[in-house]
Length: 363
Image 1 (cartoon, rainbow, N blue to C red):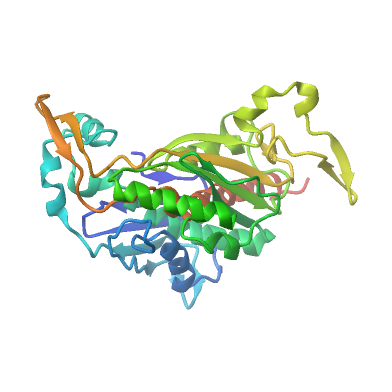
Image 2: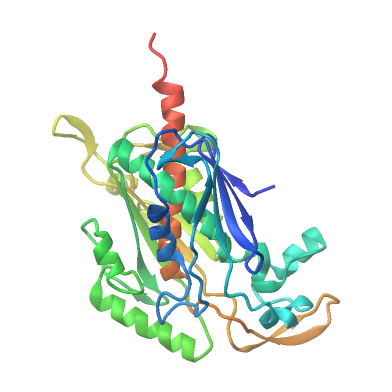
Protein backbone atom coordinates (compact mmCIF):
# COMPACT_ATOMS: atom_id res chain seq x y z
CA UNK A 1 0.00 0.00 0.00
CA UNK A 2 2.70 2.46 -0.98
CA UNK A 3 5.11 1.74 1.86
CA UNK A 4 7.49 -0.53 -0.08
CA UNK A 5 10.07 0.59 -2.64
CA UNK A 6 12.37 -1.37 -4.96
CA UNK A 7 12.33 -4.61 -6.98
CA UNK A 8 15.26 -6.81 -5.92
CA UNK A 9 16.63 -4.54 -3.19
CA UNK A 10 13.36 -3.71 -1.41
CA UNK A 11 12.63 -1.55 1.59
CA UNK A 12 9.47 -1.10 3.66
CA UNK A 13 9.31 1.81 6.09
CA UNK A 14 6.94 2.18 9.04
CA UNK A 15 6.15 4.57 11.88
CA UNK A 16 4.65 8.00 12.54
CA UNK A 17 6.20 11.32 13.55
CA UNK A 18 5.04 11.19 17.18
CA UNK A 19 4.51 7.45 17.55
CA UNK A 20 6.85 5.05 19.32
CA UNK A 21 9.48 5.18 16.61
CA UNK A 22 10.44 4.83 12.96
CA UNK A 23 11.78 1.72 11.27
CA UNK A 24 12.66 0.01 8.04
CA UNK A 25 12.88 -3.57 6.79
CA UNK A 26 15.39 -4.20 3.99
CA UNK A 27 14.89 -7.34 1.92
CA UNK A 28 17.24 -8.55 -0.80
CA UNK A 29 20.50 -7.15 0.53
CA UNK A 30 23.42 -9.35 -0.62
CA UNK A 31 24.96 -11.53 2.10
CA UNK A 32 28.42 -11.06 3.62
CA UNK A 33 28.36 -7.28 3.23
CA UNK A 34 30.34 -5.69 6.08
CA UNK A 35 28.12 -3.09 7.75
CA UNK A 36 28.08 -1.43 11.16
CA UNK A 37 25.63 0.62 13.16
CA UNK A 38 28.16 3.46 13.04
CA UNK A 39 27.98 3.64 9.24
CA UNK A 40 24.20 3.90 9.39
CA UNK A 41 24.35 6.39 12.23
CA UNK A 42 26.69 8.66 10.27
CA UNK A 43 24.03 9.21 7.62
CA UNK A 44 21.22 9.54 10.17
CA UNK A 45 23.19 12.24 11.99
CA UNK A 46 23.32 14.23 8.76
CA UNK A 47 19.51 14.01 8.51
CA UNK A 48 18.50 14.41 12.16
CA UNK A 49 16.78 17.52 13.53
CA UNK A 50 18.44 20.08 15.78
CA UNK A 51 21.82 19.88 14.04
CA UNK A 52 22.17 23.62 13.38
CA UNK A 53 20.52 26.98 13.95
CA UNK A 54 18.74 26.83 10.57
CA UNK A 55 16.91 23.54 11.23
CA UNK A 56 14.05 22.51 13.48
CA UNK A 57 14.97 22.68 17.19
CA UNK A 58 13.42 19.28 17.86
CA UNK A 59 16.04 17.30 19.78
CA UNK A 60 16.34 13.71 18.62
CA UNK A 61 19.41 11.50 18.78
CA UNK A 62 17.92 9.29 16.05
CA UNK A 63 19.96 6.39 17.43
CA UNK A 64 19.63 3.33 15.21
CA UNK A 65 19.49 -0.27 16.36
CA UNK A 66 19.93 -3.18 13.96
CA UNK A 67 17.49 -5.82 15.16
CA UNK A 68 17.91 -8.50 12.47
CA UNK A 69 19.77 -9.54 9.35
CA UNK A 70 23.33 -8.76 10.53
CA UNK A 71 25.60 -11.16 12.42
CA UNK A 72 29.16 -10.45 13.56
CA UNK A 73 29.29 -7.35 11.34
CA UNK A 74 28.16 -9.09 8.14
CA UNK A 75 24.77 -9.15 6.44
CA UNK A 76 23.11 -12.57 6.39
CA UNK A 77 21.09 -12.21 3.20
CA UNK A 78 17.93 -12.28 5.33
CA UNK A 79 15.68 -9.26 6.07
CA UNK A 80 17.48 -6.46 7.89
CA UNK A 81 15.42 -4.65 10.49
CA UNK A 82 16.46 -1.20 11.77
CA UNK A 83 14.63 0.69 14.53
CA UNK A 84 14.94 4.33 15.64
CA UNK A 85 12.84 5.39 18.67
CA UNK A 86 11.15 8.77 18.89
CA UNK A 87 12.19 10.76 21.94
CA UNK A 88 11.40 14.48 21.93
CA UNK A 89 7.63 14.22 21.38
CA UNK A 90 5.29 17.14 22.00
CA UNK A 91 1.90 16.04 20.63
CA UNK A 92 0.10 18.81 22.54
CA UNK A 93 1.49 21.33 20.04
CA UNK A 94 -0.77 19.75 17.41
CA UNK A 95 -4.06 19.55 19.36
CA UNK A 96 -5.66 22.38 17.36
CA UNK A 97 -4.81 20.54 14.13
CA UNK A 98 -6.98 17.57 15.05
CA UNK A 99 -10.00 19.32 13.57
CA UNK A 100 -8.39 21.96 11.34
CA UNK A 101 -6.56 21.38 8.08
CA UNK A 102 -3.12 22.97 7.73
CA UNK A 103 -2.70 24.77 4.38
CA UNK A 104 -0.60 22.78 1.85
CA UNK A 105 -0.32 19.79 4.22
CA UNK A 106 -1.66 16.25 3.79
CA UNK A 107 -4.24 16.66 6.58
CA UNK A 108 -7.26 16.99 4.29
CA UNK A 109 -6.24 14.30 1.79
CA UNK A 110 -5.30 11.74 4.46
CA UNK A 111 -8.54 12.38 6.38
CA UNK A 112 -10.65 12.07 3.25
CA UNK A 113 -8.88 8.96 1.93
CA UNK A 114 -8.71 6.94 5.14
CA UNK A 115 -11.40 8.52 7.31
CA UNK A 116 -8.83 8.69 10.10
CA UNK A 117 -5.36 10.17 10.59
CA UNK A 118 -2.69 10.76 13.18
CA UNK A 119 -2.63 14.56 13.38
CA UNK A 120 0.36 14.71 15.74
CA UNK A 121 3.25 16.06 13.72
CA UNK A 122 1.61 14.93 10.51
CA UNK A 123 1.80 11.25 11.43
CA UNK A 124 2.86 9.15 8.46
CA UNK A 125 3.05 12.16 6.12
CA UNK A 126 5.82 13.70 8.23
CA UNK A 127 9.35 13.88 6.82
CA UNK A 128 10.37 11.91 9.92
CA UNK A 129 9.40 8.82 7.89
CA UNK A 130 12.56 9.38 5.84
CA UNK A 131 14.68 8.04 8.72
CA UNK A 132 14.01 4.55 7.38
CA UNK A 133 15.03 5.56 3.87
CA UNK A 134 18.32 7.07 5.05
CA UNK A 135 19.14 4.00 7.17
CA UNK A 136 18.48 1.69 4.22
CA UNK A 137 20.32 4.05 1.88
CA UNK A 138 23.46 3.77 4.00
CA UNK A 139 23.51 0.03 3.34
CA UNK A 140 22.77 0.46 -0.37
CA UNK A 141 25.54 3.03 -0.57
CA UNK A 142 28.00 0.56 0.99
CA UNK A 143 27.09 -2.06 -1.64
CA UNK A 144 27.70 0.43 -4.46
CA UNK A 145 31.01 1.59 -3.01
CA UNK A 146 32.40 -1.91 -2.60
CA UNK A 147 30.99 -3.23 -5.89
CA UNK A 148 32.10 -0.40 -8.15
CA UNK A 149 33.59 2.51 -6.20
CA UNK A 150 30.45 4.53 -6.89
CA UNK A 151 30.48 8.08 -5.47
CA UNK A 152 27.17 9.86 -4.77
CA UNK A 153 27.15 13.53 -3.82
CA UNK A 154 24.16 15.84 -3.36
CA UNK A 155 24.34 19.51 -2.44
CA UNK A 156 22.22 22.66 -2.49
CA UNK A 157 22.41 24.96 -5.50
CA UNK A 158 19.55 27.31 -4.65
CA UNK A 159 17.64 28.60 -1.62
CA UNK A 160 14.70 30.85 -2.43
CA UNK A 161 16.12 33.21 -5.09
CA UNK A 162 19.76 32.79 -4.04
CA UNK A 163 21.58 30.59 -6.55
CA UNK A 164 25.14 29.30 -6.42
CA UNK A 165 27.32 29.46 -9.55
CA UNK A 166 27.76 26.20 -11.43
CA UNK A 167 29.91 23.71 -9.51
CA UNK A 168 32.24 22.36 -12.19
CA UNK A 169 34.18 19.86 -10.06
CA UNK A 170 32.78 16.88 -8.15
CA UNK A 171 32.46 18.31 -4.60
CA UNK A 172 33.94 16.44 -1.67
CA UNK A 173 31.85 15.52 1.36
CA UNK A 174 33.95 17.97 3.38
CA UNK A 175 33.08 20.82 1.01
CA UNK A 176 29.37 20.06 1.25
CA UNK A 177 29.37 19.65 5.04
CA UNK A 178 31.45 22.80 5.64
CA UNK A 179 28.25 24.87 5.86
CA UNK A 180 25.00 23.98 7.66
CA UNK A 181 23.17 24.82 4.44
CA UNK A 182 25.24 22.19 2.53
CA UNK A 183 26.14 24.39 -0.42
CA UNK A 184 29.77 23.82 -1.53
CA UNK A 185 30.17 27.45 -2.64
CA UNK A 186 31.17 29.24 0.61
CA UNK A 187 30.15 32.79 -0.31
CA UNK A 188 26.71 31.72 -1.54
CA UNK A 189 26.29 29.41 1.46
CA UNK A 190 26.70 32.35 3.86
CA UNK A 191 23.99 34.31 2.05
CA UNK A 192 21.68 31.29 2.07
CA UNK A 193 22.12 30.82 5.81
CA UNK A 194 21.22 34.46 6.45
CA UNK A 195 18.09 34.18 4.28
CA UNK A 196 16.91 31.11 6.18
CA UNK A 197 17.54 32.84 9.51
CA UNK A 198 15.49 35.81 8.30
CA UNK A 199 12.62 33.55 7.32
CA UNK A 200 12.70 31.88 10.72
CA UNK A 201 12.54 35.25 12.50
CA UNK A 202 9.51 36.18 10.38
CA UNK A 203 7.78 32.86 11.02
CA UNK A 204 7.98 32.09 7.32
CA UNK A 205 9.76 29.52 5.13
CA UNK A 206 11.54 29.07 1.81
CA UNK A 207 12.32 26.20 -0.55
CA UNK A 208 15.24 25.38 -2.80
CA UNK A 209 17.00 23.10 -5.25
CA UNK A 210 19.30 20.11 -4.69
CA UNK A 211 21.67 18.78 -7.33
CA UNK A 212 22.89 15.20 -7.12
CA UNK A 213 25.84 13.75 -9.03
CA UNK A 214 27.01 10.15 -9.31
CA UNK A 215 30.33 9.10 -10.81
CA UNK A 216 31.85 5.74 -11.80
CA UNK A 217 28.50 4.22 -12.79
CA UNK A 218 28.82 1.34 -15.27
CA UNK A 219 27.03 1.35 -18.60
CA UNK A 220 23.77 -0.61 -18.59
CA UNK A 221 21.77 0.33 -15.48
CA UNK A 222 18.12 0.88 -16.27
CA UNK A 223 15.45 -1.02 -18.17
CA UNK A 224 13.75 0.19 -21.38
CA UNK A 225 10.22 1.63 -21.49
CA UNK A 226 8.56 1.68 -18.05
CA UNK A 227 11.55 1.15 -15.74
CA UNK A 228 13.94 3.63 -17.28
CA UNK A 229 16.65 4.70 -14.86
CA UNK A 230 15.55 8.33 -14.88
CA UNK A 231 11.90 7.29 -14.41
CA UNK A 232 12.74 5.32 -11.26
CA UNK A 233 14.93 8.16 -10.01
CA UNK A 234 12.06 10.60 -10.59
CA UNK A 235 9.65 8.38 -8.64
CA UNK A 236 12.16 8.02 -5.82
CA UNK A 237 12.75 11.75 -5.54
CA UNK A 238 9.13 12.82 -5.96
CA UNK A 239 8.13 10.34 -3.24
CA UNK A 240 9.99 12.57 -0.77
CA UNK A 241 7.94 15.07 1.26
CA UNK A 242 7.91 18.65 -0.07
CA UNK A 243 9.26 17.78 -3.55
CA UNK A 244 7.71 19.52 -6.52
CA UNK A 245 10.03 18.91 -9.44
CA UNK A 246 12.66 16.61 -10.96
CA UNK A 247 14.95 17.08 -13.94
CA UNK A 248 17.94 15.21 -15.30
CA UNK A 249 20.85 16.47 -17.39
CA UNK A 250 19.91 19.64 -19.28
CA UNK A 251 16.39 19.32 -17.86
CA UNK A 252 13.94 22.08 -18.69
CA UNK A 253 16.72 24.37 -19.90
CA UNK A 254 17.43 21.86 -22.64
CA UNK A 255 14.16 22.83 -24.31
CA UNK A 256 15.79 26.13 -25.25
CA UNK A 257 18.40 24.38 -27.43
CA UNK A 258 18.33 22.96 -30.95
CA UNK A 259 19.12 19.30 -31.54
CA UNK A 260 22.40 20.29 -33.12
CA UNK A 261 23.29 22.13 -29.92
CA UNK A 262 21.93 19.57 -27.47
CA UNK A 263 23.22 16.26 -28.86
CA UNK A 264 26.04 14.55 -26.94
CA UNK A 265 28.61 13.52 -29.56
CA UNK A 266 30.25 10.12 -29.05
CA UNK A 267 34.04 10.10 -28.72
CA UNK A 268 36.81 7.69 -27.80
CA UNK A 269 37.88 8.20 -24.17
CA UNK A 270 41.02 6.18 -23.43
CA UNK A 271 39.79 3.26 -25.48
CA UNK A 272 36.18 3.44 -24.27
CA UNK A 273 33.11 4.98 -25.87
CA UNK A 274 32.07 8.21 -24.16
CA UNK A 275 30.43 11.54 -24.93
CA UNK A 276 32.08 14.92 -25.45
CA UNK A 277 29.30 16.67 -23.52
CA UNK A 278 26.80 15.41 -20.95
CA UNK A 279 23.50 17.15 -21.57
CA UNK A 280 21.84 13.73 -21.26
CA UNK A 281 22.89 13.64 -17.62
CA UNK A 282 24.44 10.18 -17.88
CA UNK A 283 21.32 8.40 -19.18
CA UNK A 284 20.26 7.62 -22.74
CA UNK A 285 17.28 5.49 -23.67
CA UNK A 286 16.63 5.03 -19.95
CA UNK A 287 20.00 3.28 -19.50
CA UNK A 288 23.16 4.64 -17.88
CA UNK A 289 25.84 5.43 -20.49
CA UNK A 290 28.91 5.59 -18.24
CA UNK A 291 29.01 9.36 -17.96
CA UNK A 292 28.37 11.21 -14.72
CA UNK A 293 24.75 10.95 -13.60
CA UNK A 294 23.38 14.44 -12.86
CA UNK A 295 19.87 15.33 -11.70
CA UNK A 296 18.11 18.02 -9.67
CA UNK A 297 15.20 17.99 -7.23
CA UNK A 298 13.00 20.98 -6.32
CA UNK A 299 11.63 21.39 -2.79
CA UNK A 300 8.77 23.73 -1.92
CA UNK A 301 8.79 26.06 1.12
CA UNK A 302 7.97 24.27 4.38
CA UNK A 303 4.17 24.17 4.65
CA UNK A 304 4.01 24.86 8.39
CA UNK A 305 4.72 28.51 9.07
CA UNK A 306 4.37 30.36 12.37
CA UNK A 307 1.78 32.78 11.03
CA UNK A 308 -1.98 32.93 11.25
CA UNK A 309 -3.59 31.44 8.13
CA UNK A 310 -7.11 30.99 6.89
CA UNK A 311 -8.38 27.42 6.56
CA UNK A 312 -11.41 25.20 7.22
CA UNK A 313 -12.17 22.51 9.77
CA UNK A 314 -13.42 18.95 9.20
CA UNK A 315 -16.96 20.28 8.87
CA UNK A 316 -15.90 22.67 6.13
CA UNK A 317 -16.39 25.74 8.29
CA UNK A 318 -14.05 28.68 7.75
CA UNK A 319 -11.57 29.22 10.57
CA UNK A 320 -8.00 30.29 11.26
CA UNK A 321 -4.94 28.34 12.29
CA UNK A 322 -1.60 29.40 13.74
CA UNK A 323 1.23 26.99 12.99
CA UNK A 324 2.83 25.51 16.10
CA UNK A 325 5.41 22.88 16.87
CA UNK A 326 9.02 22.77 15.70
CA UNK A 327 9.67 22.97 12.00
CA UNK A 328 12.45 23.70 9.53
CA UNK A 329 12.21 27.19 7.98
CA UNK A 330 13.83 25.47 4.98
CA UNK A 331 13.75 21.68 4.57
CA UNK A 332 16.42 21.59 1.86
CA UNK A 333 19.62 21.32 3.98
CA UNK A 334 18.37 18.20 5.79
CA UNK A 335 17.07 16.75 2.50
CA UNK A 336 20.59 16.42 1.05
CA UNK A 337 21.36 13.02 2.70
CA UNK A 338 17.82 11.86 1.93
CA UNK A 339 18.31 12.53 -1.79
CA UNK A 340 21.60 10.62 -1.66
CA UNK A 341 19.88 7.73 0.12
CA UNK A 342 17.11 7.44 -2.45
CA UNK A 343 19.63 7.62 -5.30
CA UNK A 344 21.58 4.79 -3.64
CA UNK A 345 18.46 2.64 -3.34
CA UNK A 346 17.53 3.10 -7.00
CA UNK A 347 21.05 2.45 -8.26
CA UNK A 348 21.73 -0.67 -6.20
CA UNK A 349 18.35 -2.09 -7.23
CA UNK A 350 19.09 -1.52 -10.91
CA UNK A 351 22.62 -2.88 -10.51
CA UNK A 352 21.18 -6.12 -9.08
CA UNK A 353 18.58 -6.27 -11.87
CA UNK A 354 21.32 -5.84 -14.46
CA UNK A 355 23.35 -8.65 -12.89
CA UNK A 356 20.29 -10.90 -12.72
CA UNK A 357 19.24 -10.42 -16.34
CA UNK A 358 22.43 -9.83 -18.30
CA UNK A 359 25.37 -11.19 -16.29
CA UNK A 360 24.10 -14.45 -14.81
CA UNK A 361 24.25 -16.77 -17.80
CA UNK A 362 26.73 -17.70 -20.51
CA UNK A 363 25.48 -19.21 -23.78
